[in-house]
Length: 218
Image (tube, rainbow, N blue to C red; front, side):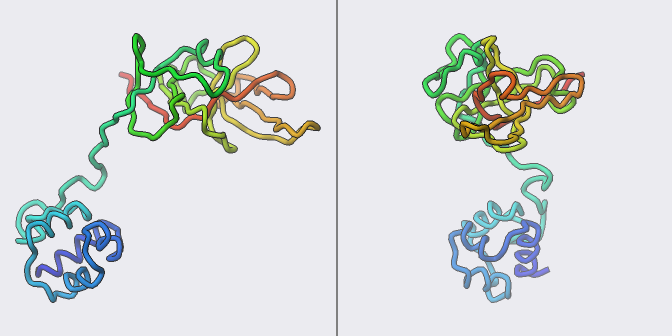
């Protein structure tokens, strides 16, 4: 197998176009075409390393054809280390949310989740309790909520009611009322629990789920 054969195989394994490879390796499309067409008989070390990063195929294999081919298992990828700490709050705290000003940072004296998501300063996490959202959401799972994200049909949301305690449900808009406000339903995934309608029970959306964390149970 020639160098160009190996480069073509690496690009095919990556699932990317030659134009994408050119962008990610900071090379011109013409240079990539030369690699693929066999007009280049060797690769500089920095170029081989750039190709490894772009394709997931080891630089040493690209250059020599020997050793392990894949830099990573294609079913996995390195996890990004989270830098943002999201406070884990209670349903009562979420129910007391009044809109736009709460910030539970910097997690002093409370549990936190760490994420790499770019979320608003008011984002918070809740631990699922009860069985109303089974089977998708089990007690002990945790969800991250962003109050500044407007829910779309089918999103999962946290809402507050007059009891000053939050609830976590699926959001389903129904129609506009006479005042021009959206009537929506909060839908449990477990059929044993009732649907809440905003025109029957006063409820207000607190925020939209952006992340769901499941924890393996033995």
